[in-house]
Every structure is written in structure tokens, then in C-alpha cells.
Image 1 (spheres, each protein chain N blue to C red):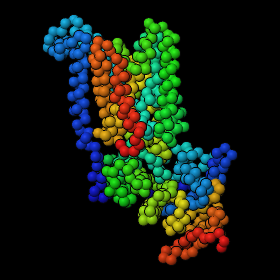
Image 2 (image 1 turned 30 degrees about the vertical axis):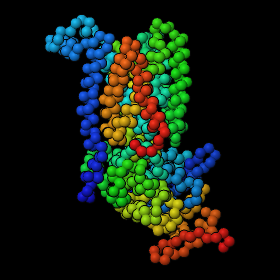
Image 3 (image 1 turned 30 degrees about the horizontal axis):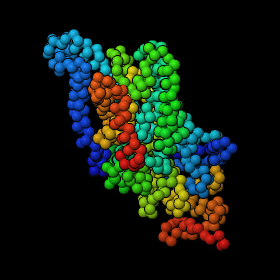
Length: 262
Length: 346
């Protein structure tokens, strides 16, 4: 991966009278992992869908490596960015390996691609997500956490310079949360731009290079974890008293909830 | 690249099961073809059947067939057999395709209402232009109904059972309209209501066979070309889009193909129920879920199912013929019920 940039300028998305995303400026470059956090209904997932070109913005635009996301051909977009969405059930009994293999679909027209490259990409993706042992298992019979990891492997197999992950740690136990987040960091270190929507503030604190905090469709703060994860700011945005301390072992903040009376 | 990369990607638990599908179906198709050409009100011995076939390609081999045997085998039974094959192949193929496209194992062209919709157009067409008119009307109305289903599917995509229910409701309403058209038309020109709603291959002609074959071939090529896309669709719309598929375009093209293929079969043979549901469902256990394997198998096994059911329809209550759709429904209905009552697995 050589270059990867996500640039959004005054991005706005309205449905009827509701403004779900309001004049958001956003940037992510290769080599960095940007976390988008905020309370429920803050517009995080909508922002991610706009960045991925799923939704056409009411105003503003999104450039992925300089390509206008809302005017690009679907096939071209699929070579630029991949996305992990919330799990949808798969009725037809594909095996985990077949699901990951489907991630190679966008490369079918690439002249440098061939079956053995596909196979290698699938195997690597499954190995790094720890899903190799599920290869011949039917996807639908895997647990929720296992399905998420297989889906992440599918995203890795797509092998794009820009990667969007929508709440990848939901339904995972702590060990697998760490594994998925480390994998996301690793991806960014391979010169990709990785944008992750997260509910878990400490996952963002630990793994993100930069954090974007959203509330009511707008960006309230963005910057390094220590600059965004501030006690006063988080308490206001989440309407919940919060305490931010130093992580005892890691060089990052640690966010805790506090009692209302404090 | 890791050392075990090859086995992971190539591990296909179905590879062994797939291997014997083709020889078995070839054997059964041969058997059904022989029975269909030999048996009936006039029994034609195998030697004479071969005699007729040989003379059609200019060879004087096997027994010299009587003129009656030649007429029965070549003008009546052969087009009926081939039309049965074509109709069965088309219905099973469309069923397998729709199940992938709609991400729903219960999808079936007739249960969704395409069949009844096509039958209205076909009945109108037959009043105007005989079998050819019926096929043309069936194709047009089939495509139109596909678009109605497309709208329904968009609204009900969250709940697979719901889209089937809407299809059943739509089908019931459209079936009533088939009746209105039939009873309002000249009885001498338009086939009776049971032909349309229960399906029949009686009176198949070479012309009907060739016309249906052309539509099915064109639609079939489109569906086979989309086999890989269907695998991507199975992951869900959002993911399919992220993998570079123009969802609206693919869905539109495939639904037109489905409507045309099913409409042509309805025009020539009425609604033959449950083929599209049953065959892909049973085959998936042997071919595995990948559509490039499944779709090929649906062609052969769908053809076999309808041709065999037609044999039963012709011979079970001889000399009375029963509609072939009764035979397929007697087998398909219980399987559908069983499918509805259990959710997960396969």
C-alpha cells in the first residue's frame, strides 16, 4: 500500500428534517488508526456509511485517495475501501473459508491476480484473525464472536488501502476484542488508513492514533486520545459523570464511569 | 504466504459429493426419456423408438417403425419430453437463482407470484395468438410481476418469511384474475383454468418447445454469468455493495431474466409448482452453497423432476391424464411445510 487518504469536507446528511451528520470535516491518512466515538445516535455509523460511499451526502463530499466516493463505480470503490458492517445472518450455508474467499471478489478483474494469490490472501486473512480452524465450518453455525472474526478476515482478504470497521469489537470477549483491535492497528501500520467506530472508549484510548468525538451529528472534539478523552468533555457529551485516569501500565488514558453525586 | 494456504482455500467438503451428481442424473434422464417415448396409450418398443430417432438423422438403423409409432414418438412424445425438460430446468434454475438473490431459501418463482402473474398475460395472449401468443404474453407478464416482487422484497427484506407470505397473497389475488380472464374468454381458444393453475404438458408442440427454449437459453446465460455475484449477494446487501456490486442493476437484470424464463414456461405449460423450491434445496446438500456448482445441477435435476412427474401424470390414472402440477405439488408441498417449520441449518 502506498498512499491512502480519506478526506471529507463539510459533510452533511439529512433525512427529512433530521440532520444526522452536520458539516463534518474528517481526515485519515495511511499509517493511522482513527477511532470515531460518541453516544448512541451521535451519527457515527452514518458518518462511516458516508465515508464508504454507501450514502450520498446532502452536502459536502468524500474523497478516497482523491476519488469522489459518491460518483465512483462500485467496482472501483471496492478496490479502494473495505468495510466491516454489523453482522447480517447468512442463510445459505457457506463455509467460513468461502465467506472469506468472497472478499476476493473485487480482484477478479485485476490482471495481476490469480487463484493462488486469492488462496494466499484468504489463508493469511484467516490466520491473522485466528479463524483458520473454522475454515470448513458453516458460517451460520459459528458463534457471534466467531462470525465477526470471519467477517474481519473477509475484509482483510479484500486487501484495500482504506479500511472501515463499524463496531468490530461488539459481541467479542476481551481477548478477542484485543486481538481484533491489534489487527486493526497492524493494518494501519501496513500503510493503510483505518477508521473504526467504537463504543468502547478504552479500546479507542488504547489503540487509536487519533480520536473523533461526535455528538448529535457534529464533531465535538478530535485529536490525540489524551486531548479528546477529557473528563469534563466526556461527562457532558455522554450525560454521565466520567473519570479519566492514567492507565497503570500502558501509556494511555483510562476512562471510567463515576457516580452521579460526585 | 503461509505454508498451509492451499488446503484452507481449497477445502471444499462437497467436492466428493458433487462428483457423482452428473453420472447419476445422466442415467436417470436416459431412463425417463426412454419411458416417456415408449409408454402411453400406444406402447412403442425401444427398438422402434431408436428406429424413429435414427431415421430422423438419416440412418436406417434398428427396427423400421410403423407410421403410427413414428407420429406418436416424434410428433407427440418427443416435443412433450423436451418441453418438460426445458420447463423443469428453467424453473429449478430460477428457483436456485432467486434463493441467492433474495437471500431466502424459501424463494420459488411461483410461490412469489411470478407464475400466477405470468398466467394472466399468457391467458390473454393465448386468446390472441395461440401457444405462441401465450408464451409472449407469459414472458411480458412474468417480467412485470417480477418488478412488483422487487418492490415487495425491498420493503420486506428484513424478514424472509414475510416476503414469501406477500408472494403467496399476491399469487392468490393474481390466480383469481387468471380465472376472470379464462372464464371471460372464448373457451375454444383459451385453455381451461386447470391448465394454467395446475400446469400441464398435454398438447406440447415442437414450436412451443423451440420458443420456450430460446427464452430460457437467453435468461439462463444471464443467470450463469451472475453465479459469482450471487455468492456475494448472499452476504447481504451492504456487504455486496462494499464488494463492488451495483445492487440495483444486478437485481433488475436478474429479475427480468427470471420473469422471462418463468413466463415462457407458464405460457407453454402453465404453473408447475414447487420445482423451483424443491430442487435447489435438495441439491445444495450435494453441490454445496456456491452458485456456480448449484446452478448447473439445477438444470439437469429440474429437467429430470418435471419429466418424471409428467410420466406419472400421464400413466398413473391411465387413460385419464392428471395435471403435472398436482404431482410436483404432492411431493413439493410437504417439503415446503417441513422447511417452514424449521429454521436453521442447511
